[in-house]
Each structure stands twice: as C-alpha cells, then as structure tokens.
Picture 1 (cartoon, helix red, strand yellow):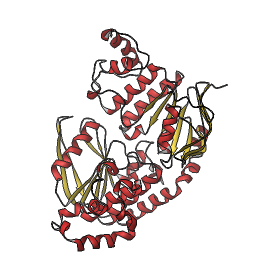
Picture 2: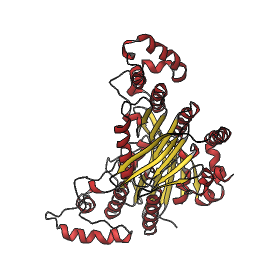
Picture 3: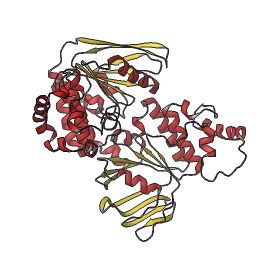
Picture 4: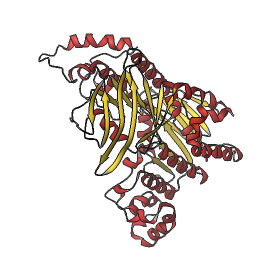
Amino acid sequence: MRREIFRMERVTYKEAEVTRLEDFNLQIYEGEIMGMVPFNGYGMSDFLELLQTNIPIYDGYIYYNGELVNSWKKSSGMHNRIGVIQAKSSLVETMTITDNVFVMRPGFKQELIRTKLLNRQLQPFLKEIGIEIPSDTRIENLSVFQRIVIELLRAVVMGSHLIVLEEVGALISYGELEQLHEIIRHYAAKGFSFLYICPHFEEVNNICDRAAMLTNGRIWKVVSKDMMSREVREVYSYTREYDKMVRSHLKKRELNEKKPEEILKWKSYSEAVGKEISFPIYRGEYLAIQIHESRILQEMSDALCEKFSGDAKVSVIQESPTVSMIFPELDYTDNLCMALSRRMGNLWRNHKIRHNIRKEYGPKLGDEVFEMPVDSLSEKQKYQLVYSRVMLQNPQIVFCIRPFKGADLTHRMVIWKLLEEFLEKGITVVDLSLNLSDSLSLADRFLLIQTNGCVREIKKEEFATISRQIPWRHLYRE
C-alpha cells in the first residue's frame, strides 16, 4: 500500500466571509509527482498558504506526513516543512550556495560555521544531480535555472517530504526544463513527493504521474497518468474554446500569407556570448523568439528600452505588464492615453480628444472602468488597459517580453486575443520568451537564439518537431 504524504479532505477556507477554497480534496503519495492545472488563479495563493501554514479553516482536515496538522476544530498556526519554489526566489542573494542550503535552514545550531567542511558536504549533492557549481558561489551570480535547482536542493537537505514547484517552466529554457525534470524524477525515486503547478497540460503530462484540475478554488477532476497518455483528446476538450480560437486563427493566417517585407533589422551586441545577435523582422508577422540563455533575454530587454524609448513607431509590452505598466497614481484615462502622447503632444490639454477616446473605447473596455482607481481593476481589465494603450499608439512593431508568463488559462485566452488584435490591425508582434508557452499558436515565424548566441530559424511546417511540451504543437501535425 502506498504511503500518503499529504491530504486535504473536504477543506473549505474563507477569508473575510468570502469562500476562497470549497470542498477541496487532494491526495499526494510518497515518491509521486502530482500535477495541478489551474484553469483560473482563484484560490491559488490561499492554497499555497494552507500548504505551508496551519491557519484556521472553515471546514475539513489537512494531513501531512501521516499526521493531522490542521482541521476545522483546531489550527495550530505552526509551519509545515514543505518546500515551495516560485518565480520569486527565497534564497538570500548576498550569501553563498552553502550558506543558503545549510546555514539558513531551520534547526542549524552550530555557533562556529565551518565553511570548508560544509562546502565539502554540499558537493556530493550537486554531483549526484549532475550540477557543477562551486559551493562558495554567491546566489546573485547564479542563473535562474541554477537558483531553482539550489532551492530544490535546500528543500531536500531540510527533509521536506513535499516540494512544490509553481510555474517554473515559464522561467527557464526547454533544455533547462528537461534537466530539471530529470532532477525531479531522481528525487521522486528516492521517496520525495512533488506538486507541480503549471497552466499547460502538455508540460504536466510530460513529468507528472497524475494531474488535478483546479477551477474557482475547487478541484473538479483528477486525471491519472494512464488517462493523460491514452485520452489526451478528452483533456483537450476542457480547453475547447481556446482550441477552436487557435484553429480559426491558423486558417486565417494561411489565407492571408504575403511575401515577407522587412521593416527592421534587429542588431544588438551580447556581452553574455561576446557577439552580435541579428535577425530580420517582417511587416505584419508574429515572430516568436525562444531564447535559451536568460542573460541574453535580459540584454535584449534592456536594449529595447535604450533603442526605442520615445519612438512612436515601436512599443514594448514589458514582462508582467499588469504590475510593471500600470501607474496607480494616475487615473484610468491618463494610464490609457500615455503612449498616445508620443503622437499628439497637446493631448493632456485637449479634453475633447480625451472625451472622444473614452467614447470610442468605452463600449469595448466598459464605461465603468473610467471611474475606477486602476489598482482596483481586475486582472483582465488591467491587461485590456495596457494593450489598448499600445493600440492607441498604433505602432508598426510591438515587442512583447514573455507575454504569457504567470497567466492562468482564463487570462492566457485574454492575452492571446489581445495579441491577435494587433495582427488584425497589421501591427508586427515580436515575442521574446525563454519558454514559448502559447506563442507558437500565433507565430508565423519561429527563431531559436541558442546559448552561444547563434540564431536558428524553424519554418512553420517544422513546428510539429519542436519540444513536445509546447501547447498547440499537435495542430501542426494535422
């Protein structure tokens, strides 16, 4: 009989009388890699908090490592030894790998820290998983992939029976993701359990033994590995609307294919690889670029701000735009019209123009949003605000930095439709990502920028040969 590591049984959690999780049931066994596919993000942060801390719940029971740790009758407020790895690293940047793995863990009581001894103790752990990094390396000098591995290693050393990874695939390249999956399988074979949270079923299917489908704070279906492999079409039926939308787009793009017309030649020098990276950009295309090295992506992102700041013909949608491109100190109309000022210098004094913009965009965005503080907008309304701002600017090219990062299924569809609107207006879209996510379904052209800085183009008829973890890859086989 398989040993149970974690169980939430009929858990209902409320916050300020609002139900965040309802009748929530989840079981994870020893050595299991359990997947979770959030169809929307409602209740996710509450679920992660309940995993780590035994705060009061309205109903149900929570068991960890064979013990009842929380219930509607009694909540201790104590922390569970569960490792959680997210986009925001929990490592101390100014300290070394050894310090983060050994010294910072709970229960470490040595008054005299023997650094050389700890460094030697860490090396077998790194060697075991095929990672070659000096133990005395400071965290600030590590890549994103290396930080994720060190966080995982710290959880292992701490004796966490359950390790949670939330959307790590969006942070690293496909090659790094495959390496991470091997490390996860290695530790699962040793008896460690994992909860792998990811909005893409393809990625979950590749690594997980089972998968739980989460919607509105409730798990409504658990899919076995056998079912994931044998009945993939049934799982795709859960995303039928999205699938239909993608198919329609692909047919429209096939009918409107035109001879490529170059409108910009990208050129930038990469310090990371010591060479210039260049490629052409064509009018009206969706160019998906997968970058295998996170430092190159950061350099290109920085170069965008330097090259095109104030350029009315080029717009940049930054990573996590609902945070990075929303200005709470300004009202909705000012947020919406910011980029338009590049084309119309007297915009701020011309109330008639602002009134006409509200009249034009009110039916699409909703009249109520113009009266709302921008920090009280929903996530969907914030995406619509940022993308409509760019639409008002009417640039020739929009550079999007990891547009689908961190978005659940519901908001991925919102982003996808907004990006398609750019294409319908004849605006070129350049998508810069480490992990393509949903980008392939929009792409007319696909470039790989490899770790050595070499640029490789993959033609549309070859999209089906790309990594099996990419959503919509199956459509290019039909």
